Length: 219
Image 1 (cartoon, helix red, strand yellow):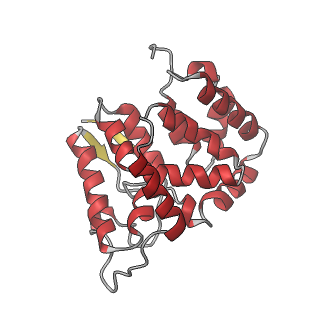
Image 2: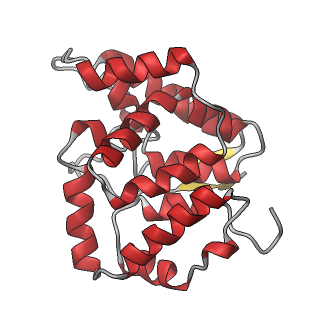
């Protein structure tokens, strides 16, 4: 990747967040040739997505985003939900992700849960290898489950997942089997009860609001 190129995962991070005017303006200025390194297929996928994205107003994109990611549990952008549901194990998984950020020298904002895919993608783009790729690979079944659900629905956001795949190894047979089980069974339904499913530092704010994410820069 040359100094002039933009890391693909930073682009996907922005485009998989709730659309606002800043994201739409950035997409309008972005040339797919500036993003790299990328193989030809994911570059074409990015170009098609940008053509679609630019053809809609902010309000239209916001509606499409909510319909795509907020009403189908197989498309949740919170990676640990697909594996653990709202169980006690999810709280531990969230802490492990937050620890991975800190160990790599990044300060993580508390404005979003650490397993939110755009946050993980930004971290993967900025962290020294192999921290970012390893974190994504650990959550590969969740990423692939979302991708397959989007592809089945011929959803435009599916094309962005080609960019994520481009930097990851081929799926193992074990991963494929796990993805199939997740698609068939969904996340576990264990309820935590009266206790929160994660420690306070990785939970939403007291007023119930969960602002948009961002991983901070290196310390």
